[in-house]
Image (tube, rainbow, N blue to C red; front, side, top):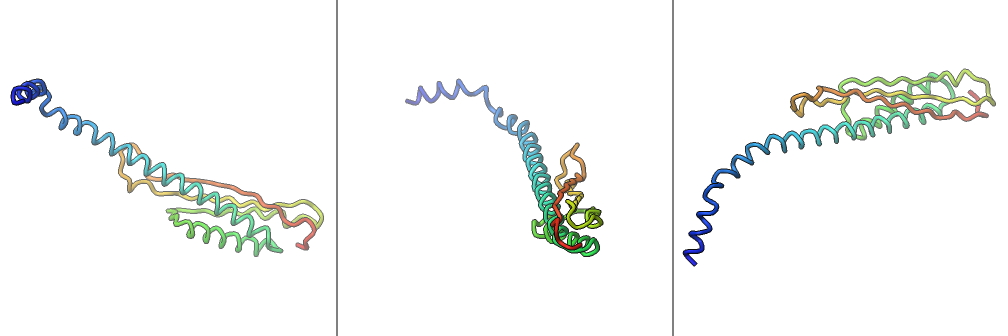
Length: 149
């Protein structure tokens, strides 16, 4: 048995230190892949949250009776939606197109909400990764055709 162990030790003697070298080479690659996965996840979450906020803003605006209250309710709905999703935008812009309120009763009209949010990526600290990504989403919701405006 001792002879067999000695023979096996002799076979693998040339591989000494190869695991340390493999680890030193692969560790930065694995860390970079992990960082990219975090960045991709953060951008995907922000895209979903901005899309949801645009939907909520357009819907809230379409339920109002005049353009002024539609603007304020849409902005409030967008803020509530983004805060509820836990998304922190470094800069955000909410644009509500309420021109549909100028049309006559009986005509088809819509309200469009466009939301832009800049999500931070600079805290991930990967070389070559941009510091922020701006995400924009737009949603259109119909105004009730026969409701007084």
